[in-house]
Image: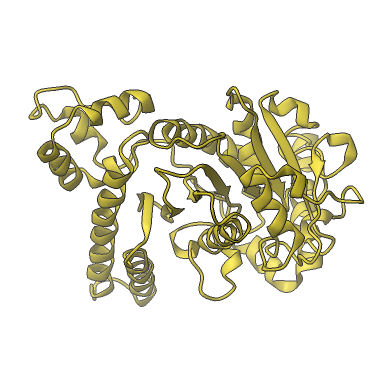
Length: 397
């Protein structure tokens, strides 16, 4: 009974602190939030894919196949076999880490177009209530936007709220790669927002890519905006626990393993982890190994599920930033009874390198043009460590 009471109190503290600094909108979000169902199974079509014997060989099981084995399988295909797989199993090919990038982009165009058409049909179904039809219109519009010329959709899964991953730059030839891991409320409907774009993964991805190009025009770079997991909605219990992060970590690890097969950067991809995304990165970090350290930037973080950077593994170089106007600084940095995410990454005791976010404002302003954080994040992703401005004051930078 006492433990349940502690949990209830902590949920109220986490939501209440945010509400106090983020006005009434945060209260509404917290009230409307509901527990999300994590997606941990292979994409739709996987069972038929595994059972398909018409290719005269066993197709790699999306649930168990290592990205290296996936890459070897696709390298053995004829063009006609590859084309057939893309058309018959777009959701499988489009989400299969280790598959050729060009094939994934093609497959996801097929999958996104199919989702758009399905949503349009639902929007015209008069047996549905007006709210359901309106949601279908929104889903169709969001899907249509992803089909614009030049967009490179690395992964797409229409289940639930929808998962989307997009690439900016040439991922196959990139010398430096950055992977953006977003926090709460990231999904198909919020992946690319025209209003306040930096609240969306696509907006953050474009901003980081533009800054990298400005700082190093002669370096081939790519940014991956990864919404490959079910994120919390609002400020309810999901945001205060690591349940969704723990489900997401193997998916992030698999993405990185896939990139090792399809890309050849000079260094491991840098992880830029925003808000709850830093909880995901904290859960995945101990499995990140390599001959060179992986850069991990936690910004606007509620904690990473650990008490110190040392717990994230020797192969990880941890950086942290939080601006003074970010309400996340008012969230309790603790973990009790499964609630909370541990120590503040921006404190000296945590052991990360605190970097400046001068000029940034609020929880979503870290990649705004002209901010120190935008400059620093790009410099870290580029490996230009001497260009990174450190924070003078820990915990408020």
